[in-house]
Length: 207
Image (cartoon, rainbow, N blue to C red; front, side, top):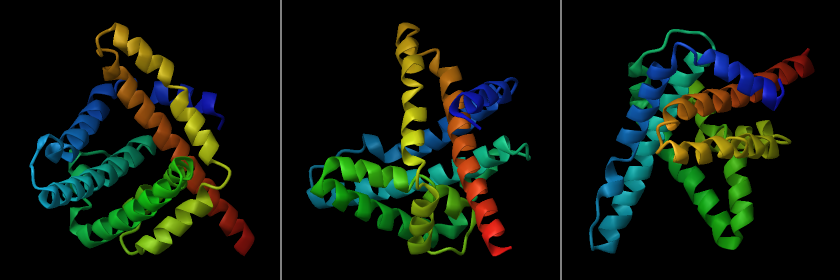
């Protein structure tokens, strides 16, 4: 599917489902940002809170991906899916720290390569959301393989929503109620297509 086709598909998909998808997004974002308002003077404690907040946000991100994956595939959705990966806490924590460390180090060297690395790892959360046994090293490596030739496409997809967000400013943010489910659905569909096409390619190679 082209970017235009994916966005058209997403618009149709959220019709009649906008409020439930929006609810899932808001719950995940709200819980994931709980520590963002916490301020302490001690730098050591502040660092711990920042990392802890990042891990919590990652738990919710993976949970939201599981919810959105079911939604995009037409399967049953439930807000319980948002918390379904807490049982795999070790995998989530290690993967987050591993991914964060690599992107952080790349960003220290050069900002742009760090950003590119972030796009290369766009499918990591999707991979661990679907596989509770895969290691962080394998998940990161697999995401890089899957995203080859698609990083620019993902960037352009995100860029294509800027106009909508600017328009939302004129409505005092009210339009975001529709934009958030729309963009999240389109992005999920795009990344799931990459994931599924990669699997099909590997199956053909095996045959």
